[in-house]
Length: 396
Image (cartoon, rainbow, N blue to C red; front, top):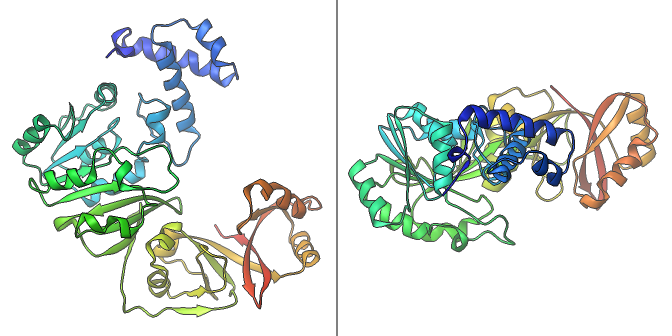
């Protein structure tokens, strides 16, 4: 399989990518760019240039100094902070990374594990990986992880831990194990005979009921930028509990059936918008108990909000939530506008359930008469079948 490295040196590729980047940023159409830059492999170069631009402006998909990746690679790439978190949690003497892609997670593993072997089926991705990373303790191997050749090679390696981030469909109406490649059942059946210490990344939308067939494991919902980002399954000695939620900072909460949390119907002075990973993990009560906050019980479905009279600066709050100061509660539209105007707000973020197609129409309803420079955030609670708005401002 030919790649751009069959035609050009690294220096020549960089020069061409810089030129393509300028043309893209000038808003030129693809047809014009490809005609103006009639390079060998120009479609591949154009795809890389677009991916590099997208990565630089994305909080979730920034890949740092990684040089070679296309748009599809970027879409399924592991965020650097996620890769670093996982590398610290499952560090070992010898680790094998199955389905390693363009090598971001493998490179993170190599910082914390003595020897890392990365296996990838796609030869292009293996070429990119070798160009992206050259650590002495990291070896990239091209092959099918379910082939007898690769399985035998891994047996000889004798890894302490095996990690796998398998391929999944771009989108599904409902996430299923059956659509993941290679087969998760086959992976566990084969590789658990080599080591019981296995970590799998799976789509976090898959229900726990569907995962029961995989055996005994810890399911960890990983939060990044206050949102559910990944789901990791830990087998063997990697398992610490049944269900956990973790932030890339390293803060974590484990399930505890003995917890009794405190619920409240009206927000106090401060509210905390919790990460969607907390809701998915079902660890709302554990979160509230550990942070000594109240759970606001009459929020909209799926919205986890804690509240307290004094601002809570605990590490768990900082890791798993955004903090807001409440400046008003009302169900009267004119009163909302009065409060917003009086406090100098000019922008209003809506954090309640609303049809995306109506979001800006609804937001403009609040903002059209505002002249301030500050930004307010609106939440909703339901009381006696009436909707009340919580007017708040984010506390930095």
